[in-house]
Length: 247
Image (cartoon, rainbow, N blue to C red):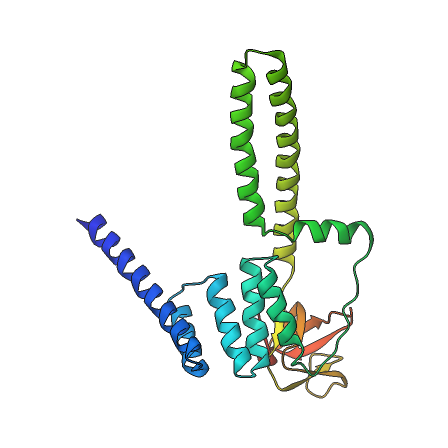
């Protein structure tokens, strides 16, 4: 009886979440962007997270010319669905609304090549890819074992070697992406204008002033201050209420 009630509760929650999402989409299509934002935000409060939800929320904020929330939600969507071209493209459009033009330090060499490759999937995505290759490896092994001709045995053997390489690459990529995910703390500036201080105190000298929408990386926390790194590699201290961490 308890299991049945739990199942009914789960089904009701899923239907309610879908209805809330559809309601937000309908409001967006009617160009009622503020109301669509409210519908999407209410859905997020129920702990229903998805790349599509954050993407649509980012679009609604973009239509309202709210640069920081738009960029923040696009970044959230990319965390759940890295490599998605549509999300990345809309994020670029949102960046054009920013005041700051902080140049990102370009990655070069082997590190860039590895990063570009592994960032095509999340660490969960790489893990599932490894599982899929492992299942195929087992299928190929069975086919190799029961093959009656030497030609088929060679084909399945080389297929097993290729799958073994793919499994190794996907596992290493998953480890690399997981380590990068855990080590990075991206945040978006939500304040209209926020000074970056040389020290974690209000009386410290301003090194630079950032404006809403700029992406930084949190390096350290001290009371209500955050030491952040800018895309160009410089760093300084910002008040915690001026930024909002993406994860």
